[in-house]
Each structure stands twice: as structure tokens, then as C-alpha cells.
Length: 590
Image (cartoon, rainbow, N blue to C red; front, side):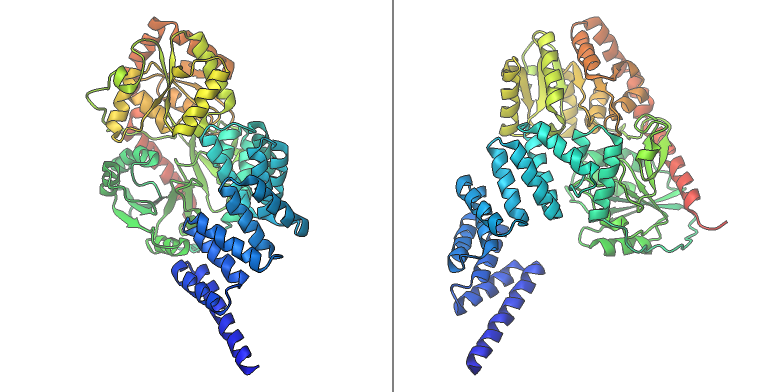
């Protein structure tokens, strides 16, 4: 009896250490300890299941399956092992067996979130979207982590242009947003929804769920610097679109009036853009190895007057840093075209087109409007001297070329239908798109054929590693077609800088009005439409009117280059005026 008690204590001690190691992010140590537990009892279902999770973490799905199967055999009523086995079976494409296990779990435990998710995902694959959405809804209500996962899964499907169940998916996100339910971050609502009220609700819910405000580190201190200290917080101080857009602004900052810091939590890609950004700053700090609180404390110690997030809630973001309030004034700018829905962010930099007067109520921040376009450009961007030939780019030797580079997730079924009608009306034309992988290309070709358009009229461009080469190939296109409800941002300025006219359709939200903002600043308001029907008509008309298009092209190649959109020095002075005003408002005391 005494030996048995000691042995139990040893086993439970091992189990506690193994659990602590796994939670602390030490999988090797956890694996060794769980394996040691099995030397005491080869049928220890909890240890087998834990080792299965570690195998999943390592990407060893086959190993995980064997371990979960052993756990179920050792303890047939262990529901957690059953649902984890169902999950790996689903990942292996064995949906019938996975569904049977998931449904068995739900009979015994109706509130098992993962089982509901598996039923939903299997139903989606089978085309039963009503069952899928109902199951996803239940899973997301039971687990905010699964709400996040469902959002990511649906985002990936849209990125592959897999539009099965699109209407059900749209309704799912719209309903969850309006009900104030956790939904993951806003990448999908931004590309699906054209309602600023819905986006505000979604941002508030997300902020409260994931990044609630913490006790402020800044407690009213007055720094009294001769220069205003700006602290840009970004995960995109590299060749990302945000880095490319902000590099010229950083180089034009007035260092007599401003002291410019950057707190970077992104990758160093050793690109020319990264080098330009670092060289333009008074101070560059890599905080990628710090947690949010430590990074915020470092900003406080740096006595930053205005903290500026360039990433918002994008995948490259660290919103938790500014949730600790390290600065007197905190600003959202550039990378996230939406409200952040949190009291941690005081100001949002915009312009009068992306947030028209009267729309302030859809934003939790105070709106600071720049006089021209809120989106910066880089007037030093180089265009390669030689453009590829049409043959080299895979384009036909003749015919009108519509370009629509950018993220495929921005292509909605409704917009794609408009593009297909444009191709039908513009005889001999082609649509030049970004190659986002074989699945996306095949799905778009299949959809084109279903709409009566020869799939060969879709041409997919490989990624250009050099930005100058990418800009040069715009010369092969005749007209850039913008997306809706999430417009092109840097892709549109790239097109205009390279001399290619851009046609946009204006919506109701910030991201759906960026194209209009850019075209107004460029002096091209005639290329702004307000309905997809007008957008379609104008695209078809321009394709059939070479003199009219040539006149617009001459304007893009000449006056547009000298417009407010591409005057980086002028833009930076406007931004600095806005930052001065923010600094004055935030300064405490009389």
C-alpha cells in the first residue's frame, strides 16, 4: 500500500511537470515526460492524448492518429480523445469516420465546441451549407478560439476563390457582427461588408474580446521635449506594401521638429525598403522578442509623445502593445482602413473622401483628415527600364488588357460577374490577375467558363521579386480594374505611378472609398463610379474608345505624376501638421 501511494505520487508529479512544460511552450520536455508516464502505464489515456497533441503540433498527423486511437482504445468513454481523433481523421479526408465520431461525442456532450465545428466543416465540404453554418455558429458561441479559426478557414477559402456557400458565409459574418459575437479579427468583414455600422460593431467586439484596455502606463507625465517624439509601431518595416508606402514619408520627415522612432515587431527581410526605413529614423528598435507589456514599457521609457500604429488589426499587428497606453496620444494610420473600436486609440488619420463629413459616428476615434489623400506614396519608386514583352508575360499579342492585380480574397462573386460581362462586351480582351496558386486559378477559370467566358481569357501573372520589374510590366496593360468593397491600396498607386489608369467603384466604407480618394488627389475624378453597373459601362466604353483612353493615359503619364497624390514632401508636411495638432490636443494642463 505504501509503495502504491508513492508510485501514484511519482506519476502525478510527472503529469504535473509534463502539463507545465507543455503550457510553457517546451514541447520536447513535455514529450519526454509524457513518454516516461507511459513506462508506468502503457494504457494511460491522458498521456497518450497529450502526446497526440504534441504530434499535431509537430505536423505529424499520422503519429497523432495512432496516439489518439490508442487513447480511445485504452479509455473508450474518453470524449476528448474521440473528438481529437475525429479531427485528425477529418484532416486526412476520412470524413465519414470523422463525422460518426463527432456525432457520437455530441450525443454525450452537446456543448463540445470542436465536435460542432467538425460537423460543420464536413457538412460544408458536402455542400450542406445550412447545416454547416448552424454548426459553425454553435461552435463559435462555445469557443471564441474556434470563432477565430472559422474566420481563418473561410478567409482561406475566399483567398482560393472557392465561393461555395458564399451567401451563407456572408450572412454568417453579418449576423455575428450585428449580434456583437466574437468573430475573429476584421479581415473578412472588411472584404465582405459595405456597412460602416457593421464594421464598427465588429471592431468593438473584437477589441473587447482580444485586446481590452489595460491600466495605462502613461499617467499624465509631461515630457517637454524640444522635438515631438513620434513612435511608429509596425510589423511591416520591410518590403510589405505598408513599408513601401511609408518609406518616402519617413525620409521626408522634418527632424528639426520631430524625433522619429520605430518599434518594429516584424521580420527583417534585408530589403532595400527595410534599409531605407532604418536609415531615415532617429531610432529603430526591434521589439519582436518582447511581449506586449515589455514593448509598451520600453515606449514609455522612451517618452514617446505620439504612438502611431501602422498595422491596426492586420495579421502583422501587435494591438496589445498600445492597449497598455504607453503614450499620451495614440493614433491609427495607414495599414488598417477601419475603426479599431477601442478607447486605446484616440485618433484615426483619414481624408474627406474615405470618411466623408457625417460619418464620424461610425468610428470610435477622433477623425483627423488630411487635405488630399490619406494614403502616402513613394516618389522615389523605381521602374525598370525594360518592360517584358506581352509574350514573356503570357499575354496575347493583340487585344485590350484589363489588369486586376492584388489579393484574390478581394474578388467577390458579384465583382467577378461584373468583370466577366466586361470581357464579353470588350471583344478580344483579357483579364490579367495575380497568380495565387493553382487552386485559385482553377476556381476562377471554372467560374469564367460557367459564365460563358473562355477561361483562356484569364491570364495569371507570376510574382515579380523586384518591385521595379513589377512596376515596369504595368506598361503592358490598358486599364486597371479596382475591387469592391475592399479597394486596391498600394496596387492602385503602383498602377498610377507606372502610368496605368485605374477605374474604381465607390462604396460606403473606408476601404471601399480608397480608390476614389486616390483618383481625386490624382486629378482623375472621371474614373470614379458609384455603382457596379456604371463601372461595367465605363470599362467597356474605355476599351472601345482608344482616343479617349489615350487622352487619359497621357494625363496619367504626365500631370498625375506631379499631382498631390505623388508629392511625397507635400504629403509629409500635411501629416506633420496633423501630428502637431494631435500633440497640442493631448498636452495635459493649461
